[in-house]
Each structure stands twice: as C-alpha cells, then as structure tokens.
Image (cartoon, rainbow, N blue to C red; front, side, top):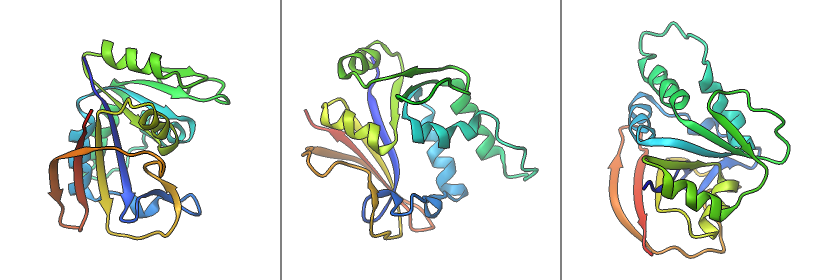
Length: 187
C-alpha cells in the first residue's frame, strides 16, 4: 500500500507561484535538484492538475543542454518518464506524454483506492489539485522545499480553511538557504 505524498516548492510566505503566475524564483540549484530527485524516486504515480501537467511535461523530452552537469536533470527526466501520470482536467483533450491518463473529475474514493492499490507512493502535484486531496483527508505526507523569498501573493500551497495536525519527521538546510520540511499527517 502506497502513501499519498504532496511535495511542493514554496516561497517563505507559502506560495507555489506568485501573483503573476511565475515560479522562476523556485528554480532549484544543483544541490537542491539532486535532493528533489531522491524525493521523486519512490513515486510510482503522479497525480497532477492540468496546469502542473503542462509545466511537468517538459520532462518527457527535455532538450540536450550539452552541460556536463546535466546528469541531475537527466535523472529527474528518467524518473518522470518511468512513472505513471494521472491528469485531472475537464479541458485537456489528449495527453502528450507516455504513461498518462486523463480523469475529468477528482473522485476522492477513486484516489484513495488508487493509493491503497499502489505498491509505491503516489505523488500529488499542483496546489489546486492538492487542495482537493487535503480537504478530502487523503494526504499522508507533506514535503515542502522553502525558498528564501517572500512573494507577497499568488497561489497558496495549502488551503486556508483546513486544519492538519502534523508530525515533523525530517528537516534539511541547503547552502543556498533553502529548507526542506517533511511532515506526516496525524490521523
């Protein structure tokens, strides 16, 4: 049985994108990207909203950068390509990535069953979709990479109207001032 894991890169004030819809401030450096690969490695399936899917589908066939340090991003791309993807969207006609299905509605019971039937953990990405899972009580673990920037508004990574009791299970500080927080959701 897998767990439903919500992983997000956020500003210090808790936003995944700023008021203009940009997340350029969230680009990880080599150290953080290497760590992020380890966070993604246990995931057998990604649940994504349409906007997050449109961002992440880049990893289906990233251009060859010619950079000798690209092994980290190549590894991330391979992890992405090897996982199943479920995109929740009313407007996406056809997925453009392999191992991808589209669901028109978020059905908490179906997601709960998918996680229960999974031999590996299931990741959920995109604040809008993750909010539905949080409100439904489905998320087992929160993973937050906090970037040392305050953006002052945008899309919050967690809903304002839900209380979660959490247990801090891991912290890590990176050279660039990024902090990782891992919490188990107490039931």
